[in-house]
Image (tube, rainbow, N blue to C red; front, side, top):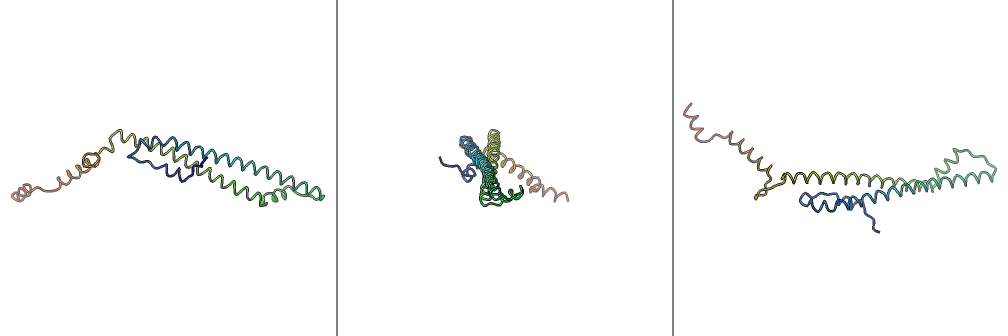
Length: 171
């Protein structure tokens, strides 16, 4: 089974306002893939946490057995430090941190998928309200309204020739 990657998930997040239908078709699959990888990452963290606990218990037992054979006294603190400072425990801790980072990345990706869903719903609402409607010149209604408003403002400020003549005659 091929593994879905963060890069593939990032590529799937883009919303194409001109292709909402296709976005809506692909969105559930994206959410499923991201959720599955998030669950895998969480399982890996749990597995490494269990391995870390088992390794610590095994090392603790070995240290105590060795101390008993040598009739030496050993403190809890020295056992704890020996276990913590061992190369095996450092390796497991490094793996655990990397796995936790993956969980965090997939958690963020899940939130991004939720936001993508909201964005697609909002874009759908805008389409239903003809927000993106264009005339034959390719101009949206908002663009036409803005052009009309600017033209009216310019007309009100520009003096027409007959108005200029009237003002000159009155002066």
